[in-house]
Length: 212
Ligand code: SF4
Ligand code: SF4
Image (cartoon, rainbow, N blue to C red; front, side):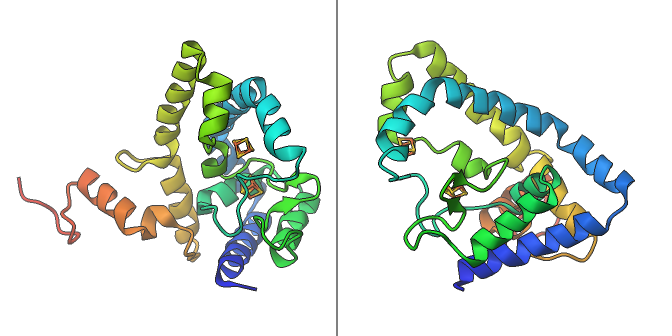
């Protein structure tokens, strides 16, 4: 198992253990917190289905190329995993863990199975990746669809980009407060994202409050 797999399985099992051990009320609270995000992802999914299924099926799925799904190339946020774990049943959770420990394809993403991606709610980076060819063929000549896609890209930041308090950050904090730690907690570990949070909170890069 390489470092990428080790980080993935460590975070997955940590989140699963916490979610399965917590009471129904705490789980319900988390589901309430992610409700808007799930609705957003549903809307994005419908848009992709309407505009991209044809080109992606023809270019990648039929040839089993799945060019989007490169080996160890995908960033999975800790919060991606929390969301997915919350909406998955135990069998689906087992499938995720099995995929990481026993990847189906040597040169593809560890989460790619014979029947496609094993995530129920794919990592946000995957959902928003479109190759140039697919984008130009599917919506390049359709200004309305192009504008909608840009609007979705902007809306994504409401959940993931910490120049304001965001869901992905609060989900990490929820688990940090319960003693969890993971390399995938990028909102708290990535130097770039930490810097954005510090500026937002009126602190310098050193972490000290800037006097006004
Ligand atoms: S976005 Fe491009 S690379 Fe990805 S599945 Fe579609 S056609 Fe293939
Ligand atoms: S997580 Fe799923 S969609 Fe993303 S690269 Fe892996 S198989 Fe593809």
